[in-house]
Length: 143
Length: 143
Length: 143
Image (cartoon, rainbow over all chains, first blue to last red):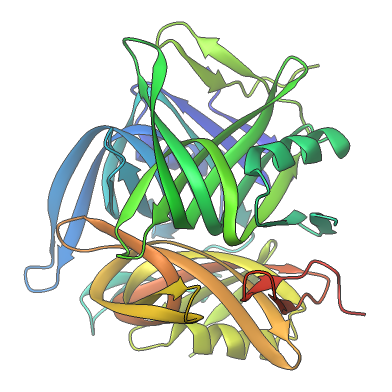
């Protein structure tokens, strides 16, 4: 089943139950040879957030199951030959309480995830900012 | 009073106190003959969220009054001749605690709601996915 | 260091630690002579939200430090010769609990803030709606 379609502003992607969001975005980026892109989305997911600990340089993870993905914002760039996705999300459970964070992983739950991808015409890379010990999107286009 | 204006990326809609968000989006979609669209928004609302119960196939609703709409993401498609809107929102009250969910209904509170609508050039329909018992956006364009 | 780059859909802005989000957006709007724009973003911030009190006509503020900015939606318009920014955000702390509101001020924390700015081709102004005592974005273009 095809998971995305070309629209004037870029691509509309609709993922189905059990699809992995990052896997599909990576496959898309490589398949369509996307230089870089912004994307927004929403849906129903099982998701893992991580909060970056600047001392250990690791993400402390937490899983949320069967939650509405009420907001997702991200950018798609590169680290050399690898697709590098940076995405933040907000989810809500059946009590409607909201949780959010840096997305480490997400798969579609009993529903779908709709993503609008807005491609750019330049290749951008994520590079380590040594002053903070974390990757930052470089807006100097890769020649 | 006119509620939207054409911009290069689509349409900028500004709704005023007591306007119903879905009613205005439907009126817009029919009036401008929009094949389908993505939209994002924010504002100040009275809103009803619903969490889909996959056993009963119904939404368990909850109302939030006089809250900031801090994020809204949605898609505008069709079910035969009817406009079909799917939107997720995040709201925050005066304590800044955030709540979110699938939007069942929303009216503008003592403020406004600003929406950017990005139209697509193809007609997409929402169709029931029998495996999950819920509607999913089909990306096979309607001829 | 340059903080934004032109992309087909508008501008991609990447702010670095200690940058003030509104200051950089204002500088951008004036420097690029932007008639008006919508923007979305995410990152890591120190932020001040405010909840508008319709009796006192003032914002009750609250600060959140070292939090993920998991969603930001805003519009960039004018009040006479001044840039007028209206932005709503959602943040999450290390427990992943989400908070949101009208953004009064935000600076980049130990990370970055990535913003996609979608310019419009018309000058829009924010004007006081006397019936609610708050500013509302006017979609009547300024000649």
